[in-house]
Length: 124
Image 1 (cartoon, rainbow, N blue to C red):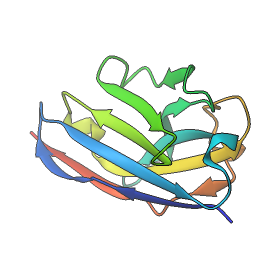
Image 2 (cartoon, one colour):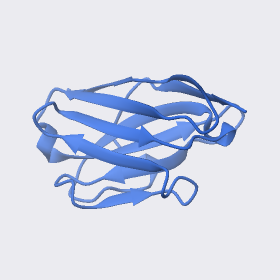
Image 3 (cartoon, one colour):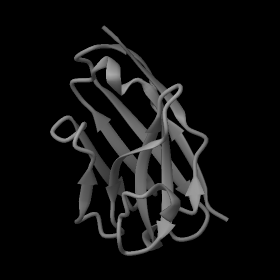
Image 4 (cartoon, one colour):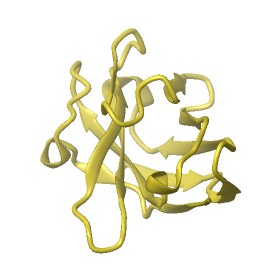
């Protein structure tokens, strides 16, 4: 069974930075493409970024392109999301997700495993 645990969230001012981590445990990390999604109060969960098994293909929501960077470390079995130049609109609970596939889908229901999420709050 795969378990995903997020860390690194918190409260920052607009323009600040955070690094989120998602530790993957259980079956082989290299089998999985990974994604980040977020959900703000009263809104649907939305795609943020994803990375394929090899780490060579990465995808981003238009709202975060140029500000967020997704990466993965095979040795540490961890996915990261570097959040720069944060805006109040980035405030949400951030979730990591995993799927056994070569393709880093941007679609929520393609993912089989989810973390509990971690809060990011950006103040103006």
